[in-house]
Image (cartoon, rainbow, N blue to C red; front, side):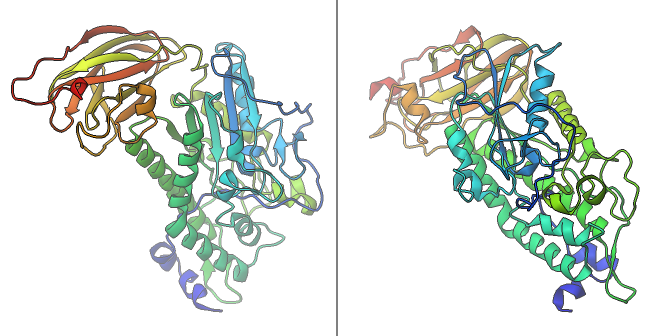
Length: 473
């Protein structure tokens, strides 16, 4: 049977040895048939081009694999095999925010495609162009699910769960392969994809990594190993796998936000949303399911919809996204003030105090150092420390020098930070965390998507110890 069987025998070894970390998505390639699952509804045409910023629209781009495209939700449109559904969570999100109490005009473009892997974001997926080509500065919000196909999770569903096709001798190796991928590769690939998207998106865009739900409702489904009294504890492995998948995704999002001093990325898990509505591989009864049941709902000619959220599941995902404080429901690009200069003194001092009355759409504020690189700032919002701007080499005044905030924001040598603020009153303090080498004062810039009141700004003070002022170079 091979070494993998020894790892999968007793329950206690499953927990101790097979600690799986894998994205709990499945996306099987296009089926030979194209039977469609889900309630009939008119499918809207794909837009010819995305809107521009400041359009008054909440502009949404949906990227990634079949869990975003909408396999299983029915009413498909677009390229054959991509399974883009008029009922995917992005389209359902649009329907919710366009009516009261939000009443926000919206625009959705879907480039997600069944079978997409992390490599499909920046590279070709067969004859389909890279999804990153769709990303531009016109979007307020980008949704994404990605990673399941890299781990070949379609085969895990097929050989570990589906009654007609499951097999212990095929299931075990798939679990181990998925474990190897997630342990050694997934985090790096996911980080690469998110950085790639951030590099093309506008600085105000919120990028939301949508988590995958658990696949199995019960905790006790298992596969018997041949005629022995030993089992592969499939349900326990998949449940642990899903939890660890969320942990990996959350860790990557937090790490990227920290390294760029930004709130650009958000992670919204879906395991609790779907709890109690997953499929049950060990039962013929799946009442209340929000997934496509392989035989009852789809059949053998639509295997690319197996174990995918159905139309109800996508509606529930959309509702969860609307309910999340991390996901904007209004246009963020409708007004952005130009860069404003502020002066600051030595480390530890207050550089700037802003007051904002933020409306329902939220606000985004961006800071960037200028002149001599090396200064850093810490932002405090209503008494709560947010983040310190990016850590940069403290080279001070030398060959690097710019008074242009647009040049500084595009150059990693200057410290910067991007901060999202929810509705309400915000008193924002900007404190000097570090001065550029050889200086005790300087100038920097900020801009905001909403009008702010500057309560105070520290002027540049003359130095008496020979230290350079930023403007002096």
